[in-house]
Length: 467
Picture (cartoon, rainbow, N blue to C red):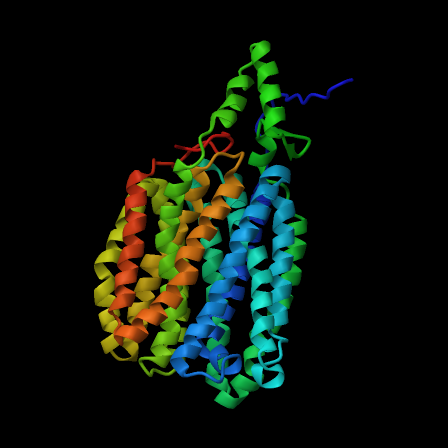
């Protein structure tokens, strides 16, 4: 009987041209923009019209809670997708996974725009809505993580924060596009037109973006870090048994590669993961409150025109085109930890004043409060998260750990947060639970940043985590 063995040969750095980097940057930006446009389209629809279209037989407050619950259910599927596609991305490469996930997201989003309403088919309408959210979420569970990993692994270390922030800029672009579409619909359509057919247009039009995104992803080269990994042979990562065998043979002949491979075997998973989860918590929780719940709360509970919160998200996203790269550059200059500490402290201190301004001010005050909260507590933190979480993990399990940390944070904070906020504000008839949740989310990230090592400039080819 013969046994096959796997051998590794030392390789130099994998070279990528400026054109390759540009293509990777556009691909990461566009895919993430599409993901967040899809989810922002849904979150705004859930806050503005879905309670009337899919849950018409309940009170406005209960309808808002039900609509937020359908928004949250997608995050459960995202976690399953993070585990499944994350492991695939670490095993066979980042590119293949990113093509699959973009197709799943785009098709399910388009089909939401073709759904019959509750008035047409009764309870089956919200059931189909939930099913499409599950498919959309399963694909999205690895999309932003994959784009984050790919772009961070493409970027040169001195500019990694800036270049990786393009993923966050993609989220901003998607939010802007979705908010802009909804702002136009609210401005030009009557309520009857919006409820009968207007709400479908943004979902159906997203199919055009899907076609371009798939073409771009298919022409993208694999991550240079994945190809440089010492545990990857012929485009596939070694199993643990193969890695142990290869490390033993490298050690027997006295080659330095043995220590590199053994570092991947000795890696104690857990510490970096929980730090990353804490870093994720503040951004994810704040995002669910500011970009989803507050839109419905301002329109339903504070009796403002629905265009007020959507316009605020629109203007805040425009400002984010300055905030996101600026935070990325500052992170490259001063480090990841100092920037995390500054942003989380500012969000904590300003949470109650900003919510007081929103709850008791006029339309201008509402918009100002939302714009500040969006840029400090959501977009700024996302810019840091895009690079810091990638640097925390070793290359052997980076995709999986990053995706799972993002999605667990999403389930615990972004998905549950709006439902909890809707419940607490209904019970207390006050705005203060929203401010309190912003403070709690931000403090969790603050503590995690204090526990995290400084990762700026870390070699991303290393198999082991940063701590």
